[in-house]
Image 1 (cartoon, helix red, strand yellow):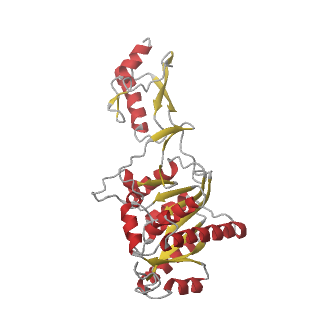
Image 2 (cartoon, helix red, strand yellow):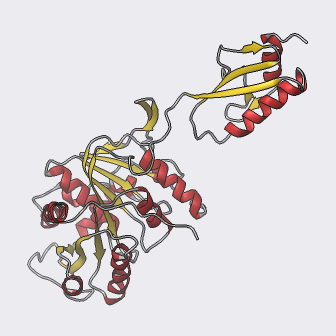
Image 3 (cartoon, one colour):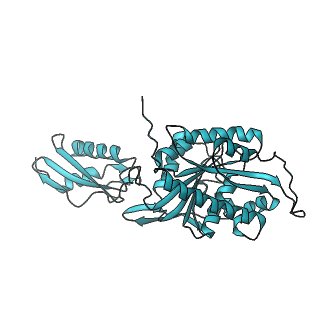
Length: 367
């Protein structure tokens, strides 16, 4: 039997590629290098990326099609090429990011996202290059807090890779799963799906050069936290809590997670949010609704810095809902509180980097 290229291309035209729902030839996947040597055929198929979920099934289907439509005696060699370069390995994902700070809380409802947003903006106002990742996959709030709910990130080609361009607002590079899902629909994902989505937001985004990369983590200790620890070398964690005893109990768990010997991420300090209530008409008055100095006492007990005490002021909530965080206005009491927090974070981060070794990515051993 004599082989010639059209026999091969006709056979491949029967193979559908699930990524485009067209056959291999129509999808432009066959490179122009069909080589025939007796009964041996060598072809090259082009795929969008190395992690293409349809790669193996397409290769198998292509080989089977040649055997079925041409001859079962044909020796088939299929090479692969990729339009997009592969994702860098873990440990080399963000080479231009100097400091990665996780903002965490053991308990929901303590204002962690508010602190994350305002910390990022305050750092940007101090002149630093800042990125903010909304890592709360199931309850993303950053698009609303930054008044960019209608933004739709786009992809661009960077060094041979298709990367997501983060949304830029108030001097901060921002990305959230909230940009990609329906805001009115619950995200019903298993843990593995959420973790994979988070990895993509980290690794397949053009974060560029950053002085501070703020991670707004979900409440508690979950798969998401483990994914972050296994993906990024986190410089340090900032723990947010209210002074209330029930919140402090969960804050201890958050601290313990980072201080665990298998994790070993330094605690940069604690933030006491809703430290007291101050009415706008009586700015000098303080009402300790959730208790007094609870986080301050916890910081002393845990031998970690108290970075800030943020008052409970109605404007913080209103500004967050309007998408104009308090840190935008440093002339207000709350705005200045977040600027002071940012300065404290810079100080403790610099000290941590000077006195301690870089954090290592957590490796979970199977067995």
